[in-house]
Image (cartoon, rainbow, N blue to C red; front, side, top):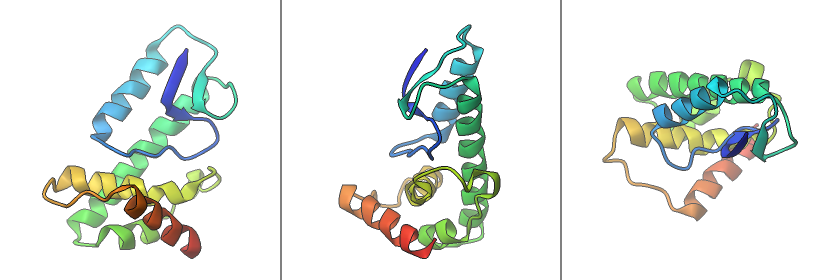
Length: 130
C-alpha cells in the first residue's frame, strides 16, 4: 500500500492541518488493509509496524497537547514540555511544535493559524531547545 504523507517511516509525522481524528482514522484504514508492504510518503519501504508507530505517536501527542491546553499552557511551552518517551528516537522530532500547534487550533479554532515561516520558526525554536 502507498500511504503518501500519512506515514513517515522512522521519522515524526507533521500534521500541518487536523483534525487529528482523521489522521488516526487513516492509520486505522491502512492497518485494516490486506497489505504486507507499506510504501511511506517519507522513508524506506516498511511494514504495518511503521503505521502502528505513527498512529501511536499521533495519539500520544494529541493526548499530551490536550492536557497542556486544558491546563492553560501556551503551545510552544507545551511542545517544550512534552517528553516523547518511546518516540524520542524518531527523526525530525522538532515537528512536535507543529503537531502541538495543530492540536491547539483544533481545540480552539479561534487561535490564529501560523503561516509556513511561522511554523518552521516554531520547529527551529524547539530544535534549539532539544
